[in-house]
Each structure stands twice: as C-alpha cells, then as structure tokens.
Length: 168
Image (tube, rainbow, N blue to C red; front, side, top):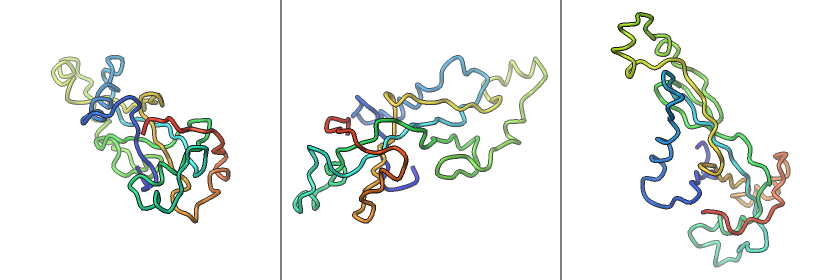
C-alpha cells in the first residue's frame, strides 16, 4: 500500500496468517505455466461522518479513531492497488508496475525435454488476477486528516452510503 490511509481487509478473516493463506489461494491450476505477476485489488473510499461515527475529543485520542469516525463509504468498489510479485516487477508505483522483469520472463525454454525438467522453475508470461472484493480489498480513508475533510466527493465516487458494520 502506498499511503498510511489505506488498509488491507480480508472479510471474515481475523486469524494470524490469514493474508498469506488468501494470497496462496489466488494461484490456481488454470494458471499453470504462468507467473502470477500481479493481484489487482479493489478499494472502497471512506469519509468521516455517518450515523455511528464518533468524532468526539475523547475518541480522537483513541487507537482506531479514523476508522470509528469514518462510517460513510462509496457504493462502488474500484480498481485501486496491486500486490506485486517481486520476481516480475522491478519498479512499482502506487497503482502499476513501471519496470517489468522482461529478461526473466523471456527465459522460457523451447526444448520439450528441458521444459519437462524445468516446468516448475521457469515461469511463462506474467498474469494479472483480479481479486474479488469479498476476498480481499483496500479500505481507503480519504478523509484521514482534518485538512482532507470533503475530499471523497472530489474522487468521482461519493461517500454517501452508511457502513457501520464493515469488517474492520
């Protein structure tokens, strides 16, 4: 994640090691021969306010204040960030890979005997997988600081939906 106002959320999972398990499940048999280069993760924006929001002075001193104060979210999930396989991407920005490891990916054998021997060690072309928001998502608290109040409507996805029961 590229900013302190973003949190990965795994709906229904609170146990230690859950992220590693969810990431491992993303590699499926239909991807055999491909390198899982990116996981495209959807995000949803949150704004301060809402029926269950607590922005009191006492709450502001507590851990998790921004989350408790931000009970309004956008209705739509949007493509937000990627989780990058470092074997594939040499230089990454906030939302994309700027330098792919083309030399590494081009090193795929064409000799059938060699392919059988090295099938598990030399991946083929890179693949991007879109992850369902019900599996993994980013909660983006776009009004984390006081100076960002009112920012959510400027992002083309207004935060006008009450969401007091989200998986934190």
